[in-house]
Structure formats: structure tokens, C-alpha cells
Image 1 (cartoon, one colour):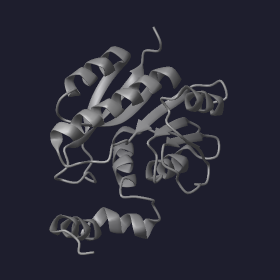
Image 2 (cartoon, one colour):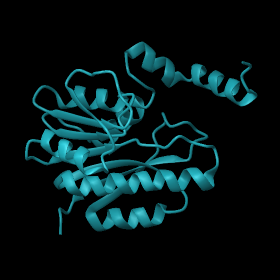
Image 3 (cartoon, one colour):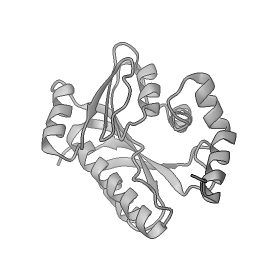
Length: 208
């Protein structure tokens, strides 16, 4: 079957992408690893011994980075609706974390502790239509925040992918009510044409 002009353009852009090549050369699951690595360099998000929850983890690029950084004494729990190939030092939970049974399993993996950090690079299957895609991205970010409020320890941090657009200001407002500080990050590894940004919320106030 002949490829469309758009898909050919995407494939060319993908394989010409310096971060795609680096991911292949350095053994990362995806180019997204470099987004987290950039934010890590700037904000020192992940430290040895931490417990990290990675939402929307497939194919595992962020979990790889997190597991390397937390070391043997740390813990990385990854969750996604999609399966991923197993990763060293990563506990993977397949399923929808908004379902009670999956949430209960995640909490069980935490062993009655709370996470130091929740990271979410979740995105829906993108249609290319902003009016459809942005609300879906923001909805996933809100779900990630709900989960974070359940599992994060006081003073913990939360990193989440969002898009500028409808729902952005409301999400910022929710984050500011739950955390003491909020920063915006746009890693160089994000594609230039993408409107994705990352919100880094620090100093979780805990459950009221």
C-alpha cells in the first residue's frame, strides 16, 4: 500500500531526528528519554533511593531513565494500558489506573509508602486536530493529577505533559492549590512543531 505524503514526511522527519538516532545509539526505548534527561539536568528531579511512579510509561523511555537514576535502593513503578517489554529494576503494571483494581495494585506495589515523584508523559492517539487533541491531553493530565494526590508524599513533585489551550489555565490553578511551586519546561528534545510543554509542580501540600 502506498504511503501518504504526510506519513512519508513524518517517517523522514523521524529518522532524520537527532534524538531518534541518539536513542538508538545509547540504548533508550524512545527519544522521549532525552526530554526527561534535560529536565533532570535542570531541576534534579530524581535522586538515588527515590520512589518514582511513571504513568503512561510505554514504551518505557522515561522508566529507563528513572530506574538508572534511583539506583538499587530506589523503586520505579510504571503503568500503562499498553504492554511494554520488561525493564531491569522497573515494576510494570498494565491497566487503566483510573480503575479501582489497578489503583489498588499500584498502591500495593508502593508497600504502604508514598511516592517521592510522579511523572506522566501520557498522550492520546493524536488526530492532528487541536480541538480534539488538546482536551484529551488535558483530561489525561487531570487524571494523572488525581492519581498523584492519592499516592504522592508531602513535599513530593509531579511532572506532567500538557498542551497550551483549553483547560491549561484551570489545570495550572489546580496544581497551584496542591503544590507550593510550579514551573514550565519545554525541553529541546520536544519537537519544534509540537505545542507540548511540561509542568513541574513541587512541594506537594498533602491531602487536606
